[in-house]
Image (cartoon, rainbow, N blue to C red; front, side, top):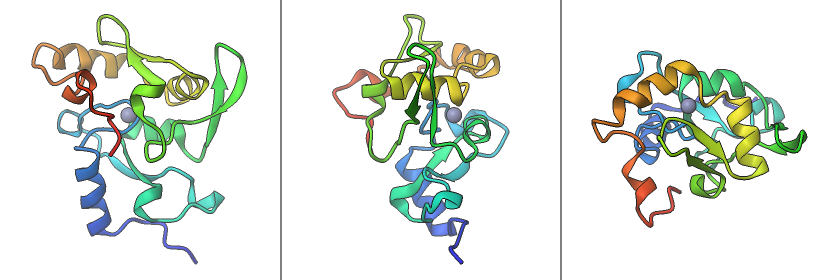
Length: 151
Ligand SMILES: [Zn+2]
């Protein structure tokens, strides 16, 4: 039977690779009481392996909403689209922030379906962003650089 839980070493690597931010909504682990989760991008129930290329760091909110889903409805086209894959896709290609920096805006069918399915603009998450902006802790610095945001 496939091993479903990441090892302690894998967990450390996943946290480091993600710079301790949810790889979907980019919320920093340091300010959220609920533990972040090392999740399978392709769920083990669908054959996903417990290996670094299939693991991502997710906040409990994104992880709970994602569950075992790999697709979601793009509210713009009302068609099914794959969810964002933090290992294979660049965050900035699929998402951006609105002018205030409080809301994640999907730029593509993948981005829009992921924002909707993972409920990435929940009120409490937005409240946290509002507090992190003046502390320069949100959005993450790489968003403003030429960096890819891909690890
Ligand atoms: Zn998240």
